[in-house]
Image (cartoon, each protein chain N blue to C red):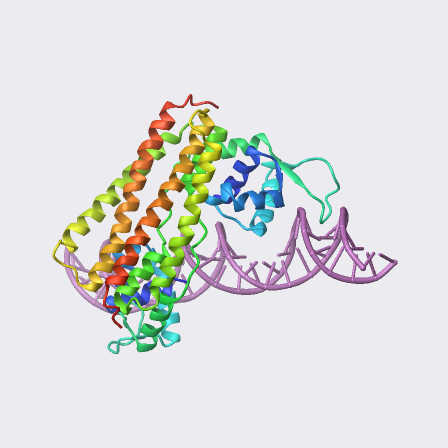
Length: 181
Length: 181
DNA sequence: AACGTTTGTGCAACTAGTTGCATAAAGGGT
DNA sequence: ACCCTTTATGCAACTAGTTGCACAAACGTT
């Protein structure tokens, strides 16, 4: 149940329309909580019905008309409640690790190419995060909100760093194996 | 679409009944692909219907009667195909990072306790992984399948290490903040 | 004016995973 | 014999996320 809270956070950072939110979910917020535009529109409808956000009073609400939302006090309260509430970590699911485990039984034939592709994807993502860090978090800025956002970005950077290293290691292991089966 | 392949992998490692699989998914395999017993029973039924696995011929197939499965050649082939096939990484979703981002807007009140709880959970998981490494991967063993399985376990260890470090850092940052809102 | 593209909103159907509960057999205790 | 717990299998309903497509207005082109 995190999508509504991701949207509330995004709208508090800046009131937006559905499409603007969709674009911001392709960057920034989407780096740790992705969502498609259909999910976003559906959820905006629900949040409005629940009185947590409202459509900014402006144009007629017709199709193809931009409709911007901002967060009502009840929405901010709900987000604060959710942020502080205890939550258990989601059960792990990582396809790549599962595939390696499967490869231990059925062989590594054909696997290396996709590992290389993933390595490249993680390298790109890492470079993108580092660029954002350079641009948005120069050494002098450290307002409270910035410190938290920087912390989140650091998690992204460190995770991508881990994956590039692990994949590099995995590729040398796979190359060294007899390639049985 | 990875649960059937997780089950095929587990059954190739050792033929099992639904409940035995469920228990193994609470350890081992489940460390990177979790599943409930309901998911597993449903999927066993599908895999049998598709001719990828078969119930071991023994007892009558009544309720409350143990029913073990093993993998047919078609199942092994499907697993090999899936392992080698290119797959895009799943879109990221991490609730904890999202909560930190939300806290940057609505304040960190009440957050620290749950961060501490998560830190403790990750420490426990890390200790468990390290125990498994000590037990199952002594320095001398390195048959091909062992090397791959060890690689997967290393990913788990390194990820848990990352999270404990990051959470420790996050807690000092949160403590240092004015706790606005 | 007609036509195609872009921007923006949205429904419907589907897939995957979760939660809650039901059912049956086996074994031990009294 | 009866009851209670454990082991084992399974259905049904629900929630979250994905995929494919439809619809409308705005704007530029010819």
